[in-house]
Length: 426
Image (cartoon, rainbow, N blue to C red; front, side, top):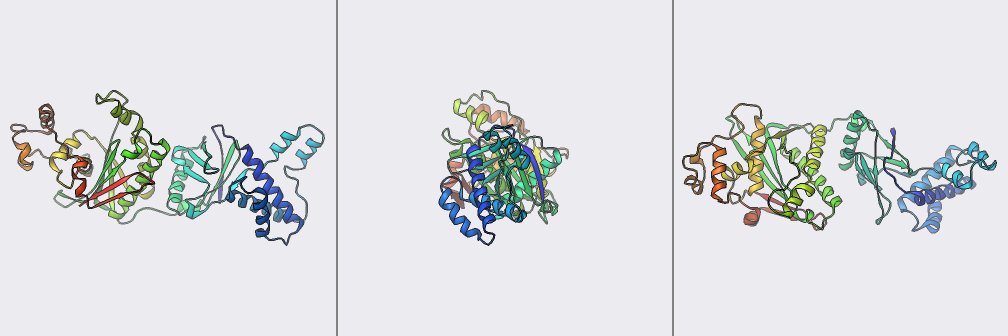
């Protein structure tokens, strides 16, 4: 087992929890010391009667185990919590009672559980150098970490994902100033790479504030491709003005793990996303659209999380220039079962297959391959850029909206708790 100690960078207040936790540890230790034959369940019954409602039941149980382990390590002598030196300083009145009690406090301890994503009392966000201590239903404490060097950060990122997949545990000790993280470093040495990934399969993503379009495509030897799978994540309920930021980010991280699972299911060697570098500005489409693009859109969170997952599970993350991807996608790939964001994801996936090959970036412009509705409009046009400008100036709508074809989805799922709607298309 490996234990690392990190300084808590933000100010937190766990004074009440620390006092209560230490009271339980002292109480349990005294019961075990007075009668070494007493059973843990009997002490637990007494603790529940005295401290019920004062501290989370799991922390009470951890405190009892701490008290028992202290007694087992010191069977032949009485333990002075804080040590003799501190106790003598208190007797000599070199420190007051408040300082004495503070210095002899043990940190709160929470044992790890594999089936509770590492630890039931904590939500881990090591990729963001933070975690959340769920003291109770009403009290959640955000903890910011610091001084994490590069190699340790990679290790914690991998540990974070193993916990999410219920393959590792993390035991935590903390006070108001420091946190101790204990885990089995041997688990991090075992390869968790996805097996038998296919070089000719790519999962593409089109990222938007309210939707994430997804498609899986497969190329043949002649560089032609077919679409194997199409899906849309509808995020409108979690990007609403009244929606919680923490809720939105939590659901987006879950979506990233769902995408990761789809890559393994379809055995895709590459994940293709847009190389977005959008600055905050007035988009000219109203305050609500500006709010979505400038303040709500978590595109950096998505790309960073997917990059971490790709490094852990061994597939490639390719970023491509998204210019005209939505326009080309709608004109070439859209139909009654392929909405706008999915069509764009198909084009993004296609571009990544041979990203650095000359003349691959745009598909061949062939007006005969387009639907009849575009042939007359684009007469005389010879490339995608001019086609886009001509249709834009004509003010003809080219996007196939999700709401117009949602009834054609072969599968839709709405979870009231997550508030994310998932549509799958044939």
